[in-house]
Image (cartoon, rainbow, N blue to C red; front, side, top):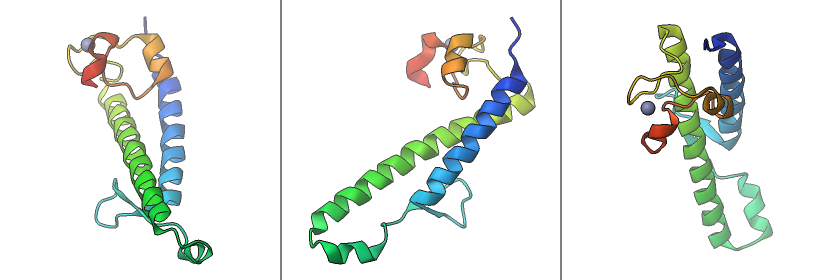
Length: 120
Ligand SMILES: [Zn+2]
């Protein structure tokens, strides 16, 4: 079976644009590190409406968590795009076996086959 690389590339690129937009909303891109974003507190004027500072910290934690998971997804997408360029897209990084088509369909940025899911 041959993978439709172009199809996955299109999906990866679309997802990359979407993730970068989400990250840009969430925080500021680290100028020294293109792949890192810093979660910023939301508009400070909001805080005058309620004096619950704890809420604020909680919200900041959530943003940080969201940011990290988005960054992780973006890292995998960039890795997958690099592999497309290198001609090794769709191969498990553990045993170099082809990754199942339905797994790639569900997650085009998957780095491992189903057998090695936990090592992704
Ligand atoms: Zn594998």
